[in-house]
Length: 241
Image 1 (cartoon, one colour):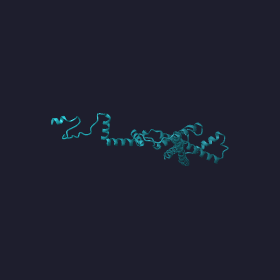
Image 2 (cartoon, rainbow, N blue to C red):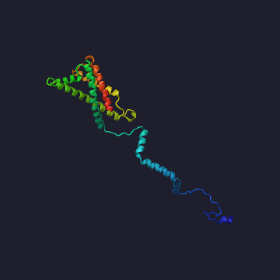
Image 3 (cartoon, rainbow, N blue to C red):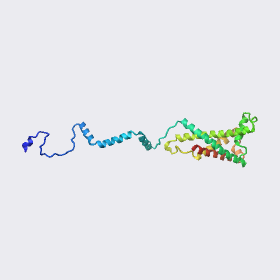
Image 4 (cartoon, rainbow, N blue to C red):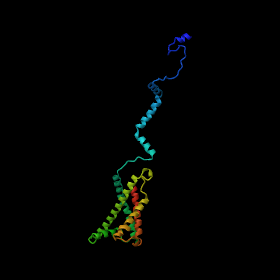
C-alpha cells in the first residue's frame, strides 16, 4: 500500500479514497472569492438591491416620509402679494356684509331712542361742511352719500382685517398648531372694538364731529359698541368661510 501511495502525484488521490464534500472552494485570489460569494448570496443581495432601487425611484414617498418625520406638512407656497390680494378681496366682501348687519343694529337703536342722529350722517355732513358743500347738497343726496361713506368705510376695514388674517394664516409656522385655523370670533370682536375706539374715541371727536364717548348722549356709545361687535363677528365669520 505504501508503494501505491508513493506513486501518487501531488493533487491526485487514490481511486478508493472517499470524497469529502467541503463546500465550494475559495480561491486565494480576492477577486475570485468575491465572485463565489456573490453567487452564494445572489438572491438576498438582489432583494436588497431591488428594495433600494424602488426607494430611489420614488422620491415623492421618501420626501413625504421625511417631512412627516420632521413634523412638517408639505404645502404649496404662494407669494405674499397673491396672499394679500386674496385676503383683501375676501375681507372687502365680508366688510360689506358685516356693515349690513351693523346697520340693522343701528337702526334698531335709533328706533328705541338710543342713537339719535346716525353717526355716519353726522360725519358726512361734517365732511361736506369742511369743503363748503353742505348747503349746496340736497337732503336726498346727503343721505345717499352718508350710506356710501358708511359702506365704503366698512368695506375698507373688512379688507384690512381679511388681509391680516390671510397673511397670518399662511405665514404662521406649521408646528405652531394655528396655521390654517379659521378666524376666531374673538378676533373679530376685538377688531370691531378697535375700529370703534379709533373712530369714536379718536379721530371723530378730534375733528369736532362728535363728543368723546363719556360726554355723548346716553345710550349712543353703548349702542355703537354693540353695533361694532356685530360688525366684527360677522366679518370674522365671512372671512373664515
